[in-house]
Image (cartoon, rainbow, N blue to C red; front, top):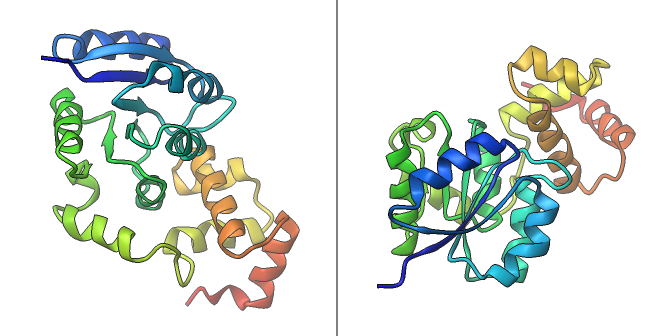
Length: 212
């Protein structure tokens, strides 16, 4: 029987090596990458069934890499394996075509389960992030492509940016990574069709933040 072909992408080499050893008894690992740009450039020629990738990678982050990969090799399924527990980030990953979202703090069997579920055409997300409501979480993403208003997390980020905080400071205050803050900032700018940080701040002031 032909084994499922998988690519692994993460900027931590030791982690990739360990993950490869864990998966190889059941799957064929056909390539490993440590940055998003190399992944996008080389993955099409390897023609994998799955790509397991992190959100935070150098040169090109996992979300942007995933978007590009779904254009280049649409039949390849994407499974995100990350430390990022932000539900908005997970939702964006699924909107961009992901089949699974697994936390690195989960048991290794969860990743295998996600791959098996995706092979059957289903979606998988770490239950810890959905409070047991995986079906409704995915359904909400599929039926609501763009948010009608800012999410609570986006409001928190925007409020702190308006106060003059840097993204590094916002990350520290909200106990998230700097890349997560950047994701929220540029997601708001994209949804609101704003081109600069100044325009985002002006929008917030003009709308009185709508924080209540």
